[in-house]
Amino acid sequence: MSDIHYVTEEGLEKIKQELLEMRTKGRQEIARQIKEARDKGDLSENAEYDAAKEAQGLLELKISKLEEIVGNTRILDKSRLDLSRVAVMTNVRLKNKNTGKEVTYQLVSEKEADLKGGRISVTSPIGKGLLGKSVGEVVNIQVPAGSIEFEVLEISL
Image 1 (spheres, rainbow, N blue to C red):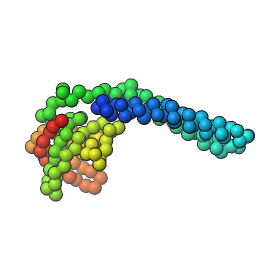
Image 2 (image 1 turned 90 degrees about the vertical axis):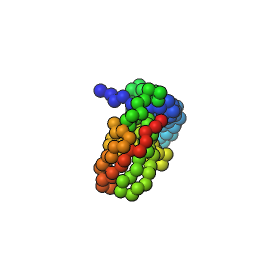
Image 3 (image 1 turned 30 degrees about the vertical axis):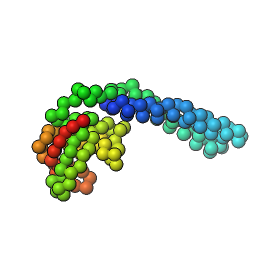
Image 4 (image 1 turned 180 degrees about the vertical axis):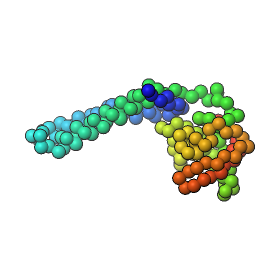
């Protein structure tokens, strides 16, 4: 059974572009490598040929996974989001109760996560801990470095 992936329109376009690139340029490059290896003679003892065939298998697996993701992707409509609680696609401004620093994150799908860009995955420890919380709530989240206590200051688009 497949998981449904919720992404933005831009996120879906990025995935589709990656898939197109693998289908075209990726497959062409692998075919070129296989042809070069074949031209070198005996295939039974040709490590380059074996490596190229293995790379082809891995590429096809990646293509298959991306096709599955595209097929199970749903675009989120921001206009229908409930801003009373933290959800996928919302921006949440937090105050770290330990340090007093404020930070803003946008909760996104795993495929769209970019910590430097302030976009964290809903499947990350912080993302999971924030889902469903509302303004004013204090949440204690377990992260690999220990425990962090956040106060939800604002939820927006």
